[in-house]
Length: 165
Image (cartoon, rainbow, N blue to C red; front, top):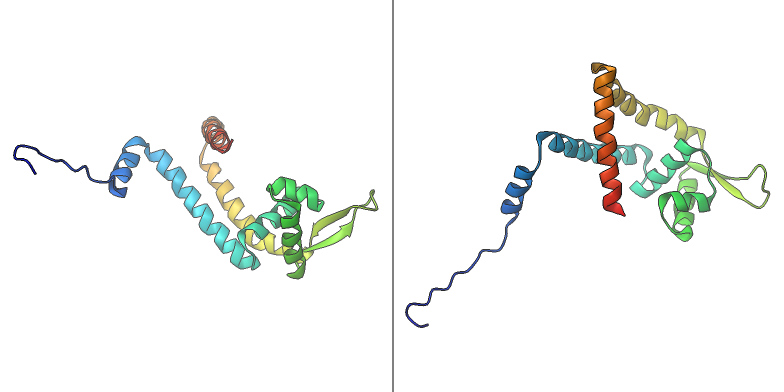
């Protein structure tokens, strides 16, 4: 190397540098929302254990319980999965006693996926208490404050949807 030449090596960006920049860019409320998202993932994992299902199968079951019986094609559309993948999901749900396939009441060729009463009972025992506890937190706020909370959450949801497009 020639004298007088200085070579500077820039360090690779580290996760610590990113973490510092990330924390500096966000407000405390955003961190609280991220904590809620992380806790929601843990609640989902607990629900998967309670129903003895994987996350995709639990999502399918919840879709059917919340929206009513669906055709396999309708379920595939709502989950954004292929019909072949949904057939496998429905097969697993049926084998574990969470759903049944039944004839469509007006279209004799069509089949509907219907949750079993046992799964609905389990949802009342495991999922509803969590949802009602979250909902009860709103009792601490008056109507004006709830409107502000709703406006914020709607804006967050819109940005999340836009990020997925």
